[in-house]
Amino acid sequence: MDWRQLWEIVSAPDNVPIVGLALIVPFFAWFAWRQARATDQLISNLEADPALAATHHRKPQPFDPSWQRELPVWPYLLRIEFLAALVVTVLLLVWAITVNAPLEEPANPNFSMNPAKAPWYFVGLQEMLVYFDPWFAGVVLPVLIIAGLMAFPYIDSSPLGSGYYTIRQRAVALWSFGLGFGLWLLLIFVGTFIRGPGWMWFWPGQTWDHARVTYEVNRNLAGIFGITNPWLGALVGVAAIAAFYFAASRILFKLVTRTPLDRRIFERTSRLQYFVFQFFAITILAALPVKMLLRLVFRIQYLLVTPWFNI
Image 1 (tube, rainbow, N blue to C red):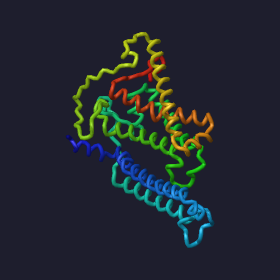
Image 2 (image 1 turned 120 degrees about the horizontal axis):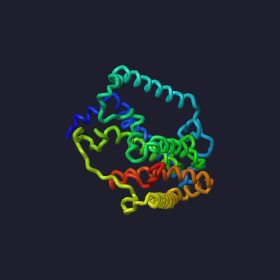
Image 3 (image 1 turned 45 degrees about the horizontal axis):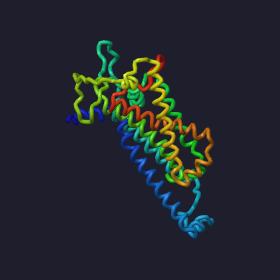
Image 4 (image 1 turned 180 degrees about the vertical axis):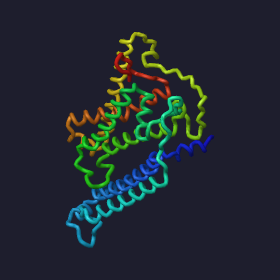
């Protein structure tokens, strides 16, 4: 196991932001989860004890600030934001002074880097090129992912969870956004630390062998059934995708209405809101990872092959 090579990848100036994401995102996700769990426990206690709930809804006393329902922006919020801005500024200064910019020599037409990787914020797009057509992986899917992550918090019709951390009262929106954001980070990590020369799969610690040759046969879905007619093969692909979306929609409906609170929130949601949420949730959270697994495990390159695009 060549762990020295792994350290070279991790310590490269290009990958400093990714290493920072790997450390910062889990910490703040845990911290937010911890705060949300404490709030949910408090809500459960208030619901279980009517006397305590009545005390909570009375006007807060000056000697009992822990029961205040509202806090002024100054100094509580602005003080924290100011300190956070100072910490981020110091980190950026230290980073800029101690780490050289990842600039290289002028492009040489006689020499191509292997692997040639995009900047860290685009390496996820480069990884998606393995699974989809370039126009679909580089244009359509990124737009759907960004639009879906923006839409998830606003499609949720719950009037609760505004101004405080909670999982129980905003479970659908939080899980949808969290899984989508985590999937995007996973694509970045795979493209950075797993993909080696020739964009081949190398596990962490495995030596990047530039002479390695893999004999992997990629098949389309229609080819598995021995279908050679392109129109019939496209029909099979459409039927498979439609069946997947139908099954995923039924499972998703069960998930978003599994508790009484979720059912009440669902009743407040319009048909348009729910269908928009359902489309983005199935496309981002289900279809994308399933297609990745089909390619990596079963070597299925495309489900739907047409003269204009392949999926």
